[in-house]
Amino acid sequence: MGRNMTRIDDTFARLKSQNKKAFVAYIMAGDPDVERSLAVMQGLPGAGVDIIELGLPFTDPMADGPTIQLAGQRALEAGMTLDKTLAMVRAFRATDTTTPIVLMGYYNPIYSRTVEKFLPQATEAGIDGLIIVDLPPEEDAELCIPAQKAGMNFIRLATPTTDAKRLPKVLTNTSGFVYYVSVTGITGAAAAQASEVGPEVARIKRSTDLPVIVGFGINTPEAAQAIASVADGCVVGSAIVKEISTGKPVPEILAFVASLAAGAHSA
Image (cartoon, rainbow, N blue to C red; front, side, top):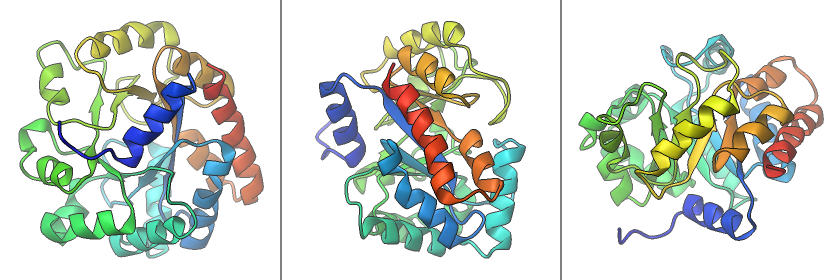
């Protein structure tokens, strides 16, 4: 491909050499405020998180379930913006230059900023990849291709309904990893079942060399282990965001994250 290795590529190479699965954690930037959100984020690598997915709050998050929607609302009410999200990434990067950060969100805030302005700002802040859930592959010229040119991974979602005809389209221009959504519907819904996920991951892997990471419906260390064992790793979002929403002390939240990470890493 002739691209430079990103932090995401490096992380998967390292995990592969250790024969370990990846544990990816999602948090919403600025939920419930920047200070607490940043404290959790800074603690994630120490809790065993390999890749951080940072949610960019948006007013109309149609792919997200109630847990993540509410987190986005709390962040927006506390005054979270794209600029403050980038500032949060810069603050994180001041002490951690190795953990990959994937910005996950919707196209509107980036479109409003303009792609030309956003990409240099995001790479300078230390963002390694983007998951923009409402940009289909048909729109690749819009953000995906410019992002890859800027040295960022563009990560795509595949779902149980991504059929053999659609899959090559989804995989075109994808890099970093493929995010397989284990259940049809919104985040935080039904529980993921390894027996159903395994064959689907195998199907995707027949079409790509990229790691396949499974998310949606994983909320216990046992589930993290079961799902990671049939994929290259797993993502936990809603369950962590729920812990943050209870107002628990940060060390308790991180202990919960560590238990999930240990589950995924024991796969």
